[in-house]
Amino acid sequence: MTLVFPPADDASDEALIQAMAGGHEDALRELHRRHARLLYALGHRMLRQRDDVESCVQDAFMNAWRHAARFDPTRASVKTWLVSIAHHRFLQELRDRPDVALELEDWDAPVAAPDPTDRILASRAVQVLEPSQRELVELAYFRGHSHSELATLTGLPVGTVKSRLRAALDRMRRHLGGAAQPDPSPSSDALEGGEHP
Image (cartoon, rainbow, N blue to C red):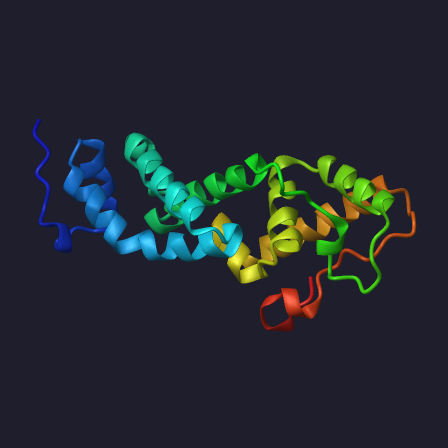
């Protein structure tokens, strides 16, 4: 059966994904036109290097093209799906950078210069988290994303983001065994509208 692809400007995002699954490149171009600006903005916030952002956004759309047939509209909107694909690609880029380290000074901007031991402890504490918790912590505390931005990036409700972050921080504190560490609770500057978890 031949898929009839409606005019791009009349198609819903879901129809574009369906058309992409059928091999229609025009659908990919239209989806890029609609959503690339958002992905570039998120990428600049996380990576700060234009060439890396462009490469990662291109990879994200190519991943969407390759996996269009797997898209499930009952689980997420197309926008959330694209943001999730790009978010994972941005994180991979950060992890692949040899000069990027998750250092304790990024935690809540402590006034005193951290001891190298503190950096090691913080990095080890992050490693005990589940992958989903680790991503939230990295984005919130190492990259400065607010709760609402995390909700957009992950497709989770803001309340769920807050509760998962709280659980992650509790687990890290338990791992550190109550050692004297800077309080990793986000400052009001790091949260949307001065919210506290």
